[in-house]
Length: 208
Image 1 (cartoon, helix red, strand yellow):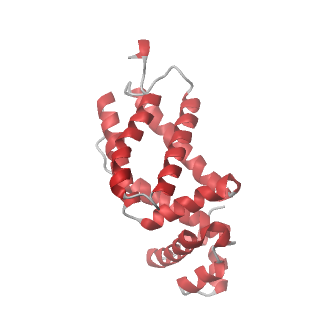
Image 2 (cartoon, helix red, strand yellow):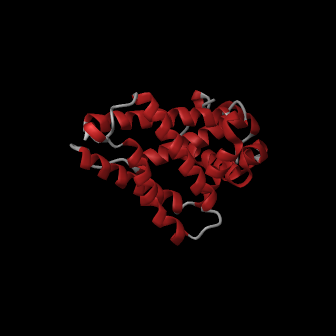
Image 3 (tube, rainbow, N blue to C red):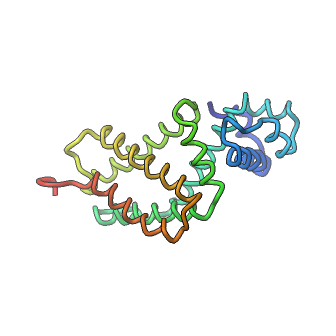
């Protein structure tokens, strides 16, 4: 569930304080191990106030995941609008580069991702995030098809499901690997996994 509407009406600095406290707790302990009381204490607000903004710990977790998604969207804001297939894939490469830079430079993001995937699909916040991701991917595919950069021989929703599944698998692998593997070994893999995604989506045969 998303946070209660009154949370969104808070001044940005107070909202940031609560989100940062919650993100730190979930990153360190995962959803199951996180303590709502520790979040409240770290945020420096009363328990009554916290329940005024969130129904429970799951709502706070959902707000943290929404905030991460907003940060990811912000990271790719301002990319040049493509006008052809080459421009589309250049945009995807540039956006991927920005996201990877944000991910690799922020240990907390890696910890949140590991906790998210370890919890699996039983968490409503996870399912909501996956639904939002699928919607974003389908929009990207629609744009790519318009520019001739993405295949049209398969239903768009099937392509979106397949692409989202691949991206989740890649994200999960990197989230685990970043905890134990030097960055110098991981960074060369980024263009290769982008090529794997491109291979899935690019037109082939008579479509070219």
